[in-house]
Image (cartoon, rainbow, N blue to C red; front, side):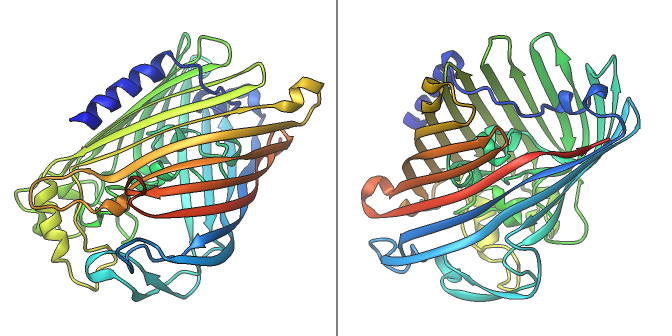
Length: 430
């Protein structure tokens, strides 16, 4: 109950905060006839280096991850995007994402509580995957003020799903809380109504739902995104929406939500008899950018009905299943805030340098039903500070240092130094 009170207080704070407007293409802007004549090609991507002072297995020791000295370099994502106009009011859009170098054949080590600790799993991937992130057709009306979209598209729940390119967050990695609670980037197939009324942009959609057999302790419902199997089930559709206000210079306020019964979308629906598994998510965010200041805040709260029964079912799943066999919480929560200041604005330089600080809290087992035991290792908060150097408005070099506390500091801290390069843009327009 106390956390729910904090949640609603934070929503109220967000509603009156001044936090960061970015130049991201909104759904409506992307469909404007004036943006390009017939075709455009672009994308975004990032290269990431990290040094960690902790081991990869948080569950091997009762005190948490043991001390270590390790580093990694990766390509978290490279995305190629295209837009093609059949005519000014009918646009075909697509995005293909290559995560962590693409696909191949590899072995993966699974770390986790319960029966999955330190298991080896053979995966048909090479550190990542190739994903068709978007493929949809948009028909616009009234010079782009209203549109109907059909196909595979982004579900804009939370600030990162709505604005997920690397120039739109300060850290070298996407915010951990949203990555843990929700699919990110979240993309599903369905139908959307979108448009603009005065200073409000809206997007309401009906899409395929989640698979409750994939829900887990560490990723809540985020690991229930379909795509593991060839066919996506839509027996019980889900509904999502986002509303953004931008009537004040530099300010953008956003609210988003999602609701859907998941049980009938299970890859084995007979195992979910007499279960609804309703997933309800609400999110609020705010952004402000002016006078050299950029600040952002976000909160996401989620509820899952029948979480106790789903946990019992998932714990008895075959070990051949691609999903985890762990309990799932009834409630999950994350909130965060970050602020930076462009010191180069003091010298009227074209490039920008933002020292920043960031705080984030997230818990994928914030609230549980009786007989489901919350694991304190899933209660995390992170303090980060660093620099973002924008060589160009769409090209950034980042450095940060993050201190992750587990269970409020009762378990070993996990500290990370990161360096990254990120970009986004339309490269060709014709």
